Figure 1 (cartoon, rainbow over the protein chains, first blue to last red):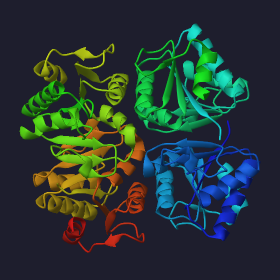
Figure 2 (cartoon, chains in turn orange, yellow, purple, brown):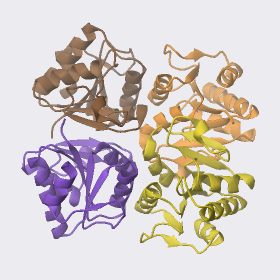
Figure 3 (cartoon, chains in turn purple, red, blue, green):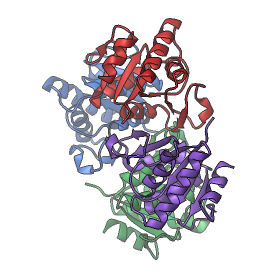
Figure 4 (cartoon, each protein chain N blue to C red):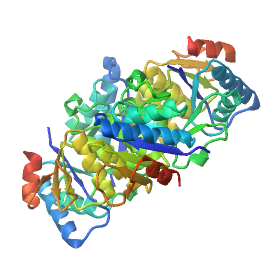
Length: 146
Length: 146
Length: 146
Length: 146
């Protein structure tokens, strides 16, 4: 059974963060993991781009009702129509979460993941006890797939 | 963008219904659609088996917390932990729904799908106004992908 | 612990149906039950009006994000922001459901209620096996509170 | 229309935190606000106790399927069956949130509340930018009802 890994982060991000997320997505696909993101822009797009370009399966769990909201690197856009509550689904669906940068939405996913007992790995993100800090994309992916 | 089609039906079903669902899944995969089911046994398994065997992408939206609840033909098992409320997600996520046989859970997905304005196609299922009755798997799949 | 009874029905209804729903709400409040509805117009409003006028507690589980969407007889308007998925919450939250008239949304709540093993009582509604048919509001309320 | 205020915090808490939460609940009821909590023990119980004792309306949004999970001070126990995803509902339903103490679940509600643009007031809780720090229960309630 394939590993299902979530990459969580904000819809707007700096170039540095985008590149890290893209690298994480690429490494996940190379390791045959399914990538789950929130399906939108920023970190979600970057991770999806990295994985998609590598031939990986990318799933976007969208807050709205329209699958064309998904970025172009989402192979399977799944609309939920439940708004921010979809963050709880993302946390639940994944075997492990990699948080990259991020605002309040990402913080909610980190907290929900930790509450659910999921492994949460962080790169340049919120400093919350329980997050495993990774030093780079390779380290984050290694930890997520361990 | 790939079509996303849901096959809905009960977790226990007769052989005749199982075979119809398997054929529907197979035809969906041949037409490059993504299959969504509830991920469990019966009609959900049969459709997944048909699509998976044909090399298709099969997604299971599971009610519980454990991805090993999924039948072996689900490529991407997505746990939700929200119980029967996941039926609303299934209806929402799909471009069209094909109902095959089915009990109350299926009826809820039919009703939610119709409420959401989705096309709902029926094979040997509940007789509810608004369902498009198909005469066989090919007819159902043609209608779903139209 | 107070009984929690849901009254489900469409947002547009005939005068006859409105009056029946209002009577049901009134009788529920007289019997000290908490009323849950979808919080909007039609049957939801009528039942809320009947209960509220009688001094009962009326809860509206709203699909959107704005509590002013609730009809004026909802004492506790609870926004969910999850759209039609709130129908699954309504079915789950209630000890028993009384369906009055109704379209697809009501049918989804009936089906979810029956799937969850809840008692579902019907007045001029969908003809689905498992619904207990009531002959009038008093009969429906008696059955719901039994 | 009554104000709907959420008090969020952990199911296990110290006596000091319990007393603060009870005082907050009491003050909310005196100001005719509806109290929403997660319905369980600890801070949720304390706030409910304070409000209930004062004659206030207390709603518990429970993660499970059994309304007897609610603490005895919940007037309206609403089961959701959606697990941790109910945290998103709590954040959504409230006009403002008061966080008292708290673990990961509380953090998720803080983050979701801030993401949704809700006012989040803190007493002895997580130090997250955007939270309005209150100096005591009265200050917290004043801020929540402003």
